[in-house]
Image (cartoon, rainbow, N blue to C red; front, side, top):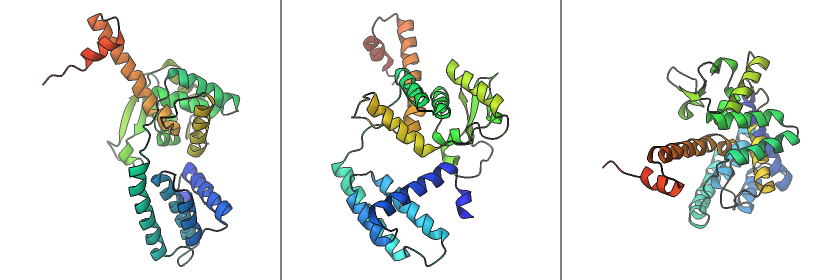
Amino acid sequence: MIMGTLDASTREAYRSRADRILREEGGLGYGEVLSFVRKHNSLANSTLRGYKSAVMFLHRLRGPGVGISETESADLDRVLDGHEVISRRTQPRKPRGAVDDDKLDHLVKFLSDQGHEDLAEACIVASGCALRSQDIEQISAEDVDLAAGVVIALRKDSSLRKVRKGDTDERPIATAEAKKVLSRRVKKFPRGNLWPNWNRTLISGLVQQAAERFGWPKNLRWDGLHSVGRHSAAVRARAKALEEVRRVGAWRSNSAAQHYSRSRRT
């Protein structure tokens, strides 16, 4: 079955998107999808295209000649192209927020209190190892070297195709908390995925709920695990680098260290 070729989080996302259109519009045909797109033109263009892709995929499962035709699909694409031009002019995208250590503590407690211990541990590891959602989906015990302090993760450009030699990176395990979690999960799941029930859609919604609950800046967008993983790790690394600049120059303020850290060689 074609659906089986998709990872669990993508299947769940497709079902969720199709269910929303069906619930709001009463069908999954061309007219219903067009109405949904026009009604929700405040959504990001990539999000609207995701809804269209979900419907098209479900129609393909039913066989040729069913659902939205190629002509209707092209028409929807033209509508979305126009929406993208308008949205870029009128709705500049917010910069992505980064979950620092203080926010991570709040997020982990928030997830744990709701019974999502697995997701809480995934956030700790993603932040400590600069991992993406697809890394969490695929990471196994074989990818973890606790002695060397590294995790093997797929490169972004290879995440959707068969892995070849050279398509992976070694990510350092940068926090003690991440190392503890990985140690526990390697023992618990010696074979297969360390997060067998990972749900990208669920964690995205929960991170946004936490942002609302704890009053994280509204001028930033909190994009699920990407804010927790890659951006969080970058913020931590930058803070450590700035601290080293302060130590080397014996500067007492961050502003002075930041000034000298911007010195140019050419």
